[in-house]
Amino acid sequence: MTRPFFGMPAEPAWSGDPVAPERPPEIDVAVLGPVEIRGAAQPFHRVAARELVVYLAFHRQGVRSDVWAAALWSDRRVAQSTLHSTSSVARRSLGRSESGVDHLPRRGRLLRLEDTVGTDVDRFARAAASPDPERWMDALRMVRGRVFDGLGLCDWAVLDGTQAQVESMVVDTALKAAAHYLRRGQGEEAEWVARRGLRVSPYDERLYRALLRATEVMGNRVGLRSAMEELLRVAADGDPLCRAAGPGALTESWRSFLHPQTMSLFRELARGGIPAAGGDPSRL
Image (cartoon, rainbow, N blue to C red; front, side, top):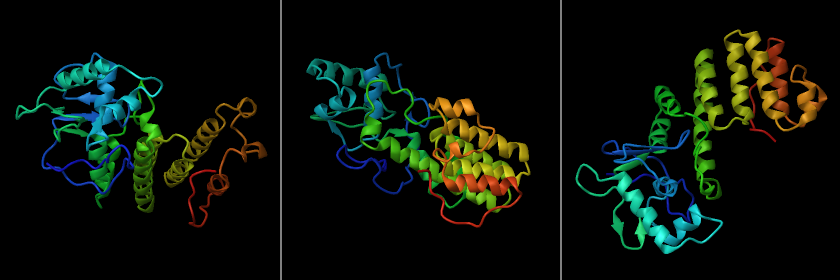
């Protein structure tokens, strides 16, 4: 089988274009929302064993024990016996493949998952790379919430850049799909894909601009203002003065929270016009 496309720990997590596998994996590590390990032989009764499997699923060429130990327990050193028991529990929980081989075999100094273990990120990337917009929709249907939600031991996915790359891939796919459906005048589809992107990146103003355009295409003037008020609430999160002022009016106090292009787009759409196409920065 072809190997997934995440590199070694010392390299960027994302390492190339997706390649279609020969067949679906027997174990699916799902991280496009609350973390799940689907198809394992037994429940993961130890948190560290579960998180070790997730870590290994995104570091496919194998990891030494000192490397994955530092990733899972960044704040302290752990005994060698703890590392051994953690990997053993992970191995037993995953079980064996249809061919009788451990999904997490013993390979000397390195821990590496067999290709029988895949991820929903692998499947998302393959679908998102297709030229077919229906496949983009298939990819976005996999998104259930914030990526890597529920990891408890350490923010390794943040620290090594994996989470940022996965989020960027989802957002780029949502923006690509939204632009396609907006060009076709399909506002409901554009709204849906923008909402999927916002599940992963709720502060990305590019997605909100796509959402604003979608409400305009649908002729939903109430939805236009509702979407803008939603963005204002998100932008003002943590600022008591702006929350007290309320999101009902676009005043000078909001300028420090929203990109000027977002403000301009809303005003143009509220007047019934769409500004000329141009650059679409995320937010400042």
